[in-house]
Length: 452
Image 1 (tube, rainbow, N blue to C red):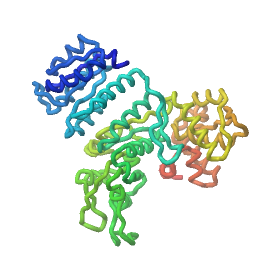
Image 2 (cartoon, one colour):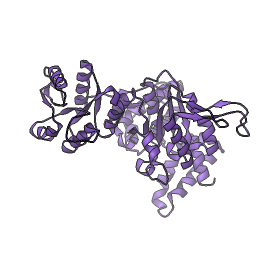
Image 3 (cartoon, rainbow, N blue to C red):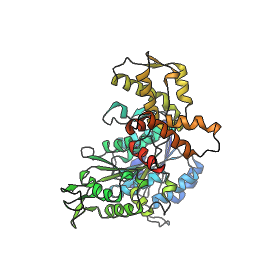
C-alpha cells in the first residue's frame, strides 16, 4: 500500500510529538490520526481503517506495568493483528524496543528521529505488507556460494529482521534445521553491525567435551592441564570487540551451560589455571537445530540461559517451506560451480526444474547446493537434465526403503545408509559426510550414536 492511501494512527502522550508527526506525515499520508490517551486505541481502531500505528513506549496512564508500550502493543495485535506497529523509543530504551520485536512490533524508531528516516521506515513497512519488495541478496560472506538469497515471503522477513537487529548489540538465537544457513545469517548480522570491522569468531560448541569447552572458550595458562604447553587465550578473548558465534548451542551439557551463563552474566572470563578475571566485550549469536519448545525443557537446557542468549530469535524456514526460492538458488549454485570447475555456463531443462521443485529437501539448502555441484561436475553438456540431479544418498536410501520396510525403525535405516556411504568412500569421513549432506561433526556424532 502506498503511504498516500494509508491511515496512520500516532499514539503518544507528548503533544509536541503528536504535532510534529502530524505536520510531517500530513502531506504524505492519506489520513493522520493523533491520540494522547492509549486507552482510546481500541475505539479508534474500530472506527477507522488504520494501516499503521506509531506507538510510544511509555505513558502516564492507568496501566502501570513499567512497560506500557509492550502492553498496548499486545492489545493492538490482539484487536487488529494485520495492523503494522512502529514503536517510538528513547535511546536509553533500545534493549526494551528490541524486545518489542519479539512481541510482534514491526519496527522501532529512536527519538529524536530524522524525518526522512521515519517516513522511509513507514513507506517500507507498507510496501512490505503488500509484497512489493523485490528479491534480495543480503550478504556475501567470502565467496559467491555463501550468499544469502531469497525472494520468498519467509526470506523477506528474515532479511528485514537482519537489517533491524544487526546495528544493535542484542544477543541473537538463530533456530532452524540443519542446512538452512544459520551460519550465513550469523555472518550477515555481524557484517551489518557496528562491530563489522572486528573479529567474527565461530565455535561449534556441540562438539566440545567439558574440558575442551573451558579451554577452547576461556583459554588456559601453561601447565593448567597435561597438554597445556603454553598460554592460550580462548575464543571469548579472540572475539573481543567483535561477534562470538556459538553453533549447536542446544547440544551442550548442563554443566557447560552453567559455566557459560556465569561468563555472560559477569562479562568476564577466567582462564584455566588462573584466578584472574578478564573483561570481555562481545556480541553473542547462538544457533541450534533444536526446536525452542524442546530447548525449554529444564532437564535439557537452563531457562535462565535461554533468556540470556535469546533477546531476539530468528527462525530460518526449511527449504520445503520456501519453494519460491528453489530455482533462484539452483541457478545461483550452477553459476558458481560452472565457474569453479572451469565449465561453460549451464542451464536447466524444464524436467530438471520440475524435479527440483518436487523434491522435499530434508537436507535443505546445503543438500540442494551439493546436488547442483555434483550435477555440474558430471554433466556432459550445457543443459542439466533431470537424470543429472541426484539427491542425498542418506535421504534417498531412507525414502526408497520405507515403502517395503514399514516395520524397520528409522534409526536402522539411517545407520545402514551411513554404513553404505562410508564403505563407498573407503572410510573417508570427509567425502562421506559431504555426500550425506552432513558436517563432519554431525557424522561423527551419528557414528558414536550407532556405535559404528
